[in-house]
Length: 54
Image (cartoon, rainbow, N blue to C red; front, side, top):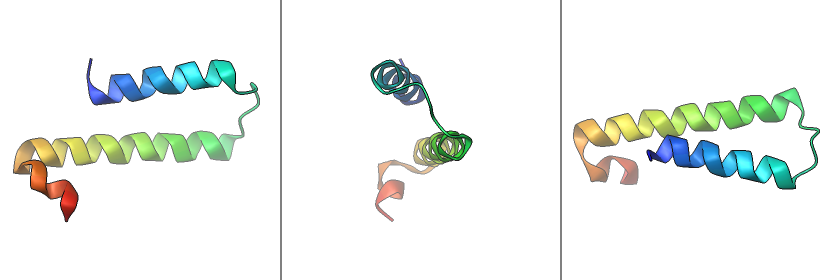
């Protein structure tokens, strides 16, 4: 299971616990965070583990 899949899985589990009403703004913030995390994963794969520390 990739890091993104794990994040999505955890997010899905949390949504079952949290009340169902989530604003569209919150959804955008979550989507942006997932995109940024995936982008950093790609950079890390290309340039090594030290890239996240800079």
